[in-house]
Image (cartoon, rainbow, N blue to C red; front, side, top):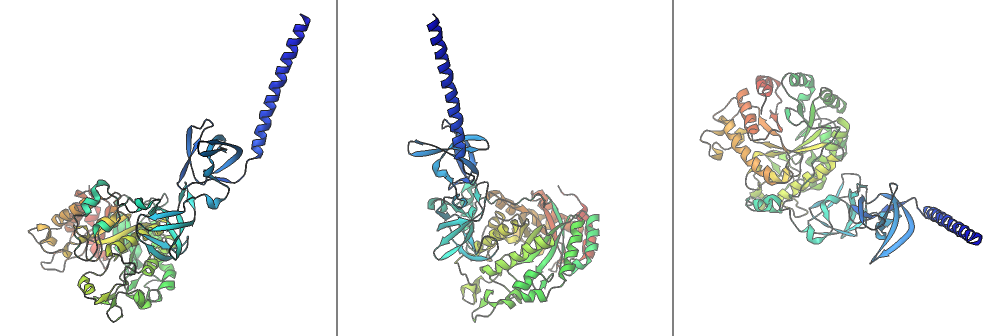
Length: 559
């Protein structure tokens, strides 16, 4: 019996020793695994996120590429894949070995991508300088990237033929087949196929209708309803009077000129760099102008900087090579002004750099681009070879304008500003205009679209209205608004509609005094059709006396 008891004790002791050995082995193994971790291992993929599996190889979570993880020596092959044990946020997982890299440059695995939307190629990764342009469906070699946020690349470094530069990732896809597709939801392509294209401005179905993310800035909140006065380059000297008027008359915003054709508002450093004539002809000193705008900002006014883009005689004076030219090669004069070609990328760059300076250095909340078009009534001259638009990339007019708006939005959003685009009222019609403006193409991209349906710009009986249309502004704007609504409804990401209203007396016969009632009729027609993003007063002289005469229309609440 004693021997049996001793044997049992020895057996228990042996079991205890074995258990201790197992525990020590596990501890040592764990310590050995910890020694195998590295400080810089990253999740890598050709898409933005990667699946992590639990230790039993069940799908657990997804994490963004670029995330740093601890990697252990333990590996296991399952079917055709090798999995590695990792630690992420204090939890253990298994991940495909192909989704790990110790080199931050190799976080992205894309070797080639394809252009889904006609895009701008930048010279480098941190400026607005344009290198080239590449059309939909083309293949790009991927050389690198600038930065990644939440697994998404901002810009890729690419090679295309002999071009090396940077492009925004949002315009690329992984397959050639996907790149050649067009956005078709909500019947947008079927709708656009019905739009006329005989005027020379382009074809509606050749434009891009993919959803475009609208900007929203926590430190720069756009009012839901903007009620704005227009203040030109000379009138801004009287900013105190406009601020006082605004406070008393329900005005919460100003549109202030930065650059009008032959009326540059201030001697901007960007003008000095790109257009010395604009700089020399400036109507205000830079610091004085900056002070005027600051007063408006300090008074709680939302400030919108207006820039005329493709009508700029002074820029043509400095750079004849960018101009729309006559057959003799000299700049073409259209109604007494010179127009840089909207196809020319150097013109884009100048205006966008000026806009970015206005946002970052002066404090503008929003940039409004006017004259985003080709000259009107020139299609016949172009077809006859009388004028040359220097169409370097073989674009349709409407494509070039939409591409400019994309470029402008990408760049100005990057510095925290919104983008609005002025368009003729005609652009809401069921055709692409001869000068390239087409409401859906611009609205789908811009933050704000601002139609200019001034009643005295219409024909006397447009829309079948029996009365002369500028004598009945409510009827006219009510009919016009229906066209706008139809265009807004079909595109996936329509802009805010904020409309220019006629705030001057007509000069056409029969002449009409645009009093408070006529102003109010225009605004009410817009709001009755749901176009309640606000309004802006067009009075080219920024006449404060006129504004005071019609102030009742501004104090009225529209619903």
